[in-house]
Amino acid sequence: MAGLTLDALFRRTLAEFEAADLPAEDARHLVSGVLGLTLTEMVTEAGREIDPEECAAVEAAVERRKRREPVYRILGAREFYGLDFLLSPETLEPRPDTETLVAAVLPHLNRLVEERGTVRFADLGTGTGAIAIALLKHCAGANALATDISAEALETARSNALINGVADRFECARGFWYDAVIGRYDVIVSNPPYIGSADIEGLEPEVREHDPRAALDGGADGLDAYRVIAAGAADHLSEEGLVAVEVGFDQKVVVSAIFAAAGFNLLDAVRDFGGNDRVLIFAGRDAA
Image (cartoon, rainbow, N blue to C red):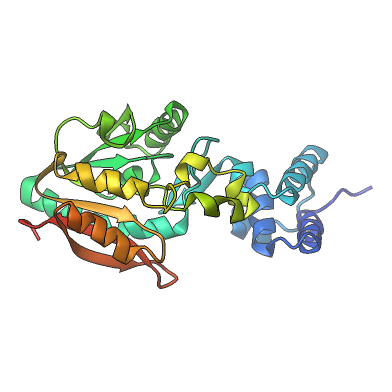
C-alpha cells in the first residue's frame, strides 16, 4: 500500500490549520522546516512518498502549533536579514520589523569604516545576537560587543556568531544594559523591551507564552529601558558617536524626548515595512 505523499501531507496539515484558524503560511513553513525542504522543493517534490518517521515528526509539530507555539520556536531557528539564527527559551524571536534597525545602522557603520578603517559598536540586550551578527556580516570592518542579562541567551548568541562566520569579531558580556560595557563605542544599538507591563497579558499567546518576558516588558509605561540607555550613552560613546534604538509604533515622540533630556538630538527616524516609526537614531548635540 502506497504511503502518504508530500502533497497529501501538506494538504492534510493545511486543513488542520484552517480548522484551528491558523495561517496557511504557517503550515507551509512548518512542514518544509520539519522535513528540511525549501519552499521550492515543497512544489518540485510534491509527489515524493513520506516515510512514517517524517510523517510522525510533522504531526507532532502540528499539534504543538495548534497549542499556539510559534512555528519557528518549534523548528528551533528562523531567518533574519538573510541569515539563520538558533532560538532558545531565553531569546526573543527576531522579527522582520527589526531588520529595519539593521538596515538603518549599516550605512553609518560603513561610513565610519571608510573614514577610520574600523568601527566598534555595542548591542545592548542582544538575545539571539541577530542585530549584531547581521551588522557584522554586512560590515567587514566592524567589531561588536553584545550584552545580555541572560547567560543562556549569550550562549545562543555565541553559537549564532559561529554559525554565521563572525565569531572572531563578536564579543559577549553578561550584564544589565551598561553594566558589562567597558570603554567607548562608535555606535550603540538596541531593540529593548518596550511594551507596558499591563499590556503583556493582552498579547497573542505565541508572544506572551513563548517570548521571554524580560525581552518584552518595558515597565509601567514601556519606557524604562530607553531611560537607562539614554542616561548612560554619553559615557560609553566615542566622539560623534550614535545611538540607534527600535521603538514601538507610537513611541517616537516620547522616546525622542527622553534622549533630548539626556543631551541627544534625533538624527533620523526610519519607518518599518508597515509604515510605522520603528527606528530612531540619535547623536550628541555637538555631533548632530
